[in-house]
Amino acid sequence: MAAVNFSLEGEVALVTGAASGIGKAIAQAIAASGAAVGLVDLTEQSNEDTAIAISDAGGRCITIAADVTHLPQLRAAVERTEAAFGPLNLAVNSAGIANAAPAETMSLDQWQRVYDVDVTGVFLSCQAEAEAMLRQGRGSIVNISSMSGTIANRGLQQVHYNSAKAAVSHLTRSLAVEWVDRGVRVNAVSPGYTATPMNTRPEMVDLVEKFSQEIPMGRYAEPEEIAGPVVFLLSPAASYCTGVDLLVDGGFCCW
Image (cartoon, rainbow, N blue to C red):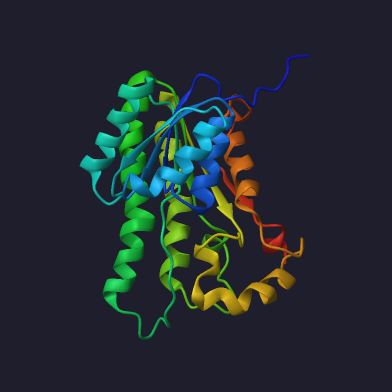
């Protein structure tokens, strides 16, 4: 019987939002699984901690400054990654922002900024990555969505974020079927409450204990627990998976 292959050995990956939280954990996991990684965030300096952790563990990476709302910068990030390591065949789009405001008083600027980063930024990232992958006829992209794209979170006023993440999940399905016959798989991972700076931001601190009680597993996820499913979807073990939106939420959406 053939062994199931979860290895990313010899692959080349790009991760947006790699400086902290889930993106940082994903970048480290991808490197530990054997891939060379282009670490993308707003500044190269913000990626230094991630780069040091990867290098100290024997992995290979470079740091790249790019704004996910600007396609030329994303194309340049792909080019730099390929110049350093070879053809790009894996990508994870983790860059995102969140904040809160009542829907009836939310400003258009606040609404638009979340959509610019969380939806348009994911689309442009996929576009730049796929330009490289489609030339080769091979690739795997994972977009980081959220369980907030499936449910409306109790106690949080974030209509912009919830609807943006729903858009990411459906964008993922749409790209998956558009590129399926050209060798590029596109999937999403939708984390539940995870112990990251975003989910412990000031407006949520008082809700952490309450939310933990509402999760069947009784706790927030650690970022590394989101990274594992991402590596699976990138790997040959998931070769028949495309258009998947994988909930990794400790059972929250079951209730």
